[in-house]
Image (tube, rainbow, N blue to C red):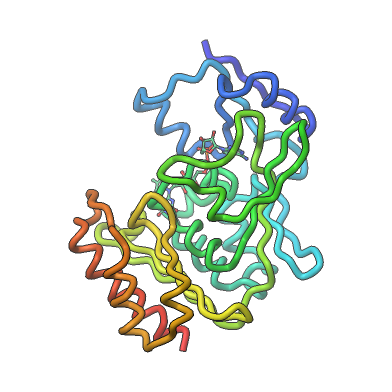
Length: 266
Ligand SMILES: Cc1cc2nc3c(=O)[nH]c(=O)nc-3n(C[C@H](O)[C@H](O)[C@H](O)COP(=O)(O)OP(=O)(O)OC[C@H]3O[C@@H](n4cnc5c(N)ncnc54)[C@H](O)[C@@H]3O)c2cc1C
């Protein structure tokens, strides 16, 4: 029998998380955990549900920065007027995830904590310079996306921590997200490209092709046209092969999609 923990406050959730550590599986929207359980890959002793925790699903702007609560659903991000007006690229990226049914369940915290390499939000959040708030009874730390995601299904979240919020700086005027699917329209990306041009210059992040989002700052700083930068990304990244495309196929798509993203940015 699986023990079910359903705290109603964040403090209570953090206490339970610290008490049970890695033995309790955190449950947010359940779209990932549910599949693992149904397929027999995961049989948790304890489930720590965040569904009843008050105040974790807010989408708001504080001092010009967008704050997405860990339990905000993809659908809430996609439909939020605040996000659509201030961070349209983010609304678009979340709107391209799966189907409305999945987006109504899947949460911001869940998609980042599961660190599946083939997710949409990590690339665009990385390009926007987002940071993630991790909290435990020991305190709070704020980490960048590059620190959070260490590899496929691997993050820096400790066994007593919860991801509570994502903070996104003001969006640069120009930002583009492109999702290339090689199979169905509701599928995960084969190649994802987020490109933004802001005060810090050009940032291009390629997702879904390796264990973690790929960014080549030196290449962007060197400049060059869209085709040249696209070629540079295609040559430098070591893509993986999976059911959505072989490494060789992905390499070609990376070149084309980076070029297209930069043309759209211009
Ligand atoms: C049919 C289908 C199609 C999909 N297509 C896409 C797609 O096109 N693009 C895409 O990006 N994704 C896609 N996904 C993935 C989906 O977006 C993720 O499954 C979802 O975002 C996970 O969020 P969740 O809230 O359901 O997480 P859960 O399943 O509840 O949890 C996911 C993981 O994160 C941990 N966790 C959750 N919240 C926290 C927290 N606050 N702190 C610490 N740990 C936490 C859990 O313990 C678990 O390990 C698809 C999923 C399905 C089922």
